Length: 298
Image (tube, rainbow, N blue to C red; front, top):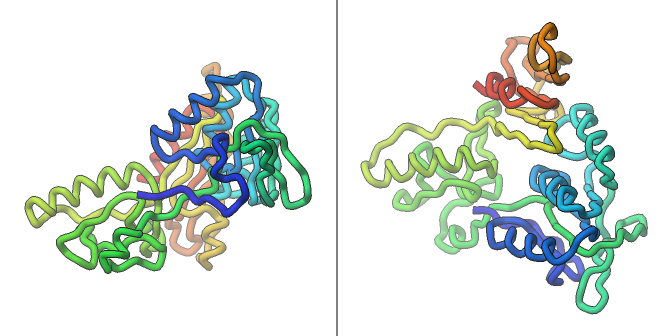
């Protein structure tokens, strides 16, 4: 699969510094939280896992600070789309440090007691959670002389076979074809991993299966009753890849306005202005975000 990226900071092996990859990690974090109340957690990284853990710590009564090196939360989305979520976070009393690089962890008596930022700011901490991303765990594949793709993950064909046809690779360690660009990428998502695992098993057992379908990168995160979802390319990603695009926004209630209880949603569509082809979509709101993103993904 994938393994968390852990920078070479002092104190990363301290007992109150955590990453979150599996249930064992979660049990360790929960054990620490259960022993303290009203303590201070610093979450480094404002991606999906970081935001979900910010919510969890807050619901347990902890004081939470969120640090992100990029100038926004959820860097995979476009900047203007995440502003409602920033308001949600600050409304919950969470302290945000955006565009802030961590310089080091301050250690005292074998425990990290503060996170030091590049500008000299020190954030007191009883617990530090590092969620700055993952990288494919390809050590075994490389040792077996399998081809590693340009994304850093294991290269596979349409039947999930590696460069050795008797060895298959799926999931976070393997490349997939991106639905929009048609190029191999590494997208560590559970849905494609599950589907491709079934295909690989079928092909290994019968020597035939359907081809692996390209992946659009559809994902969603919940945050204090709000939701942010996306599929395909953001405008930022299209710009970075040199893909011509235009965008369209819709700001509406999630159901008909004459029926009470409609929650406002912001929907952004990214498309090719010449052909009308959909390149991606993003939605932020409450109820109904998942439905809109599913339709765009389809």
